[in-house]
Length: 344
Image (cartoon, rainbow, N blue to C red; front, side, top):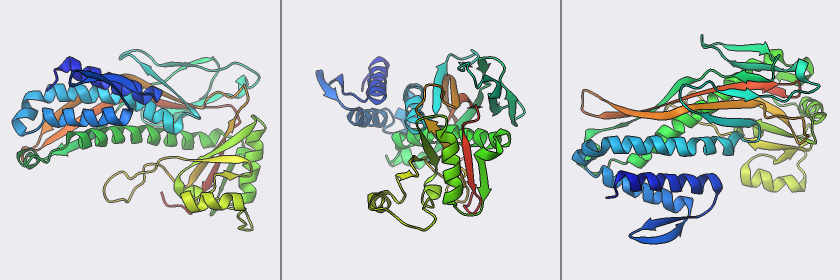
C-alpha cells in the first residue's frame, strides 16, 4: 500500500489529466509510464479499495481516505462543472475565509446591469450593479453516502462508488443553485425577453432568439433533455440534416440558427419524484461578440470537508461539505422560455 504522499501525488496527477485532457507520467510498480485520466481513475479506485479492504483497515485508514476524497473533490469538481456550464458560467476558487469578488465589464450596458444572488436569509435578491466589482456570499452544501457494517464484513464496501455519490451530490447542488438564481432573475428581464405558456411555441422561441442574437454573432439554447425533446417547428417539419440528431440523441442540435445544449438532469432522491433542475425552463444566451461576459458566476470557497457519523446500527455515513455561492449577471440580453406543461 502506498503512503499518503504517493497517494496525494496520484490524485494530483489524476486532476492534471482531467483538467488538461492529456496523458501524464506516473510511477507504478517502480516504472514510469504514461496514463490517461480513466487509467489513473481506475488506479485510484484500487488504492481506495486497498485502504478499506475490511472494517479494521477502514477504521485504521479513514483519515487518509477522507483526505484523499477531499483532495479528489477539490481537484475535479470545478472542471466537471465547467464542462457542463462553462459556456455561460465563470468559475473561480478562493481560499477559505476570503470574500469572493468578481469583476464585470464596464460599457454602454452598465446602467442596465443587475445581479441576482441568494441572500443570507435564503431568499434570492436582485439589485442594480453600480460598480464593476461585486462579491458573492458562500454557503455550505453537503453530500453524504452510507456504508453498512455488513458491507465491510463481506468485502463488498466500495469507497469509489461512495466518493462518486458525494461528488455527484455536490455537483448537482451547484446546478440547482444556478437554476434557482436564473428563475429568480426573470422578474427583472424585459418583457420582450420572456415567454411563458403551455407547450412549445416555435414562433415565440424565434422571437427570443432574434432578440438575443442582436447582442452577439449567434445564440445558444440551454435546457434539459425534456424541454429539448419538445423543440420543433410549427408545422412539425424535420429537415434531413436534423433527422440524425433526433434518431441519435432524441432532440434537434440546432433551432432557427441557435445551438441546443442539454443540461444534466437528475432526481433529488431514489423515488424519482422530484427533479434537481426545473425542466420547464429554457435559457437563450448570446454567443460571440466581444461585449458578452459570462452571466453566471460561481465561487468555490476553501477546501471540501469530509467526516463521518456513526449510526446506532454501526453503519457509517460519510459526509462531505463544500462552500460555494452563485450569482447571475444580466445586461438585457438573456431570454427565458417557460413551458409549464413540463413536470417539475
